[in-house]
Length: 148
Image (tube, rainbow, N blue to C red; front, top):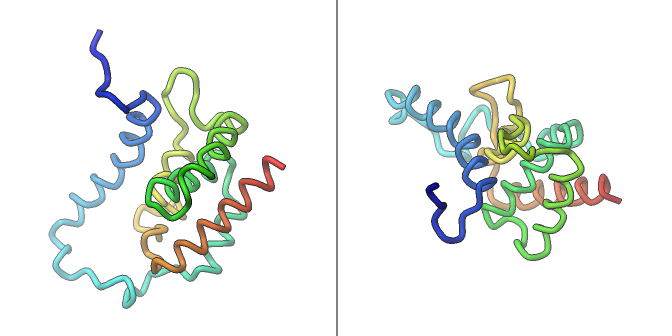
């Protein structure tokens, strides 16, 4: 049996594969139009921070866990303080199953997708860095209130 490289666990690998697969496919589909992409600050489809807060409020628990994972992985929340909350939320929402098949809501959250039904919809990365930090703080508070 092959083993994973040091430091990697199976849930990390599965999460990465689930989270990046749709993003990679999207990039390939849009490769021809890459030269006409607008900077984030000029993007017409850029979601407002308040709209993103509303999405977080209505997100299923597994997607909320994914958003928390996104925030930790992108350095928007402290790893040491937030990872235990993420671990508890994953267990409580069954975001990562024992067979490691994963939950698509968790994968969408990990990829920062705000509206999974819309393939070209807004993502957390469409927000400016201060708005991302604010949204991640909101996500952390929401997750903590669920665990309460």
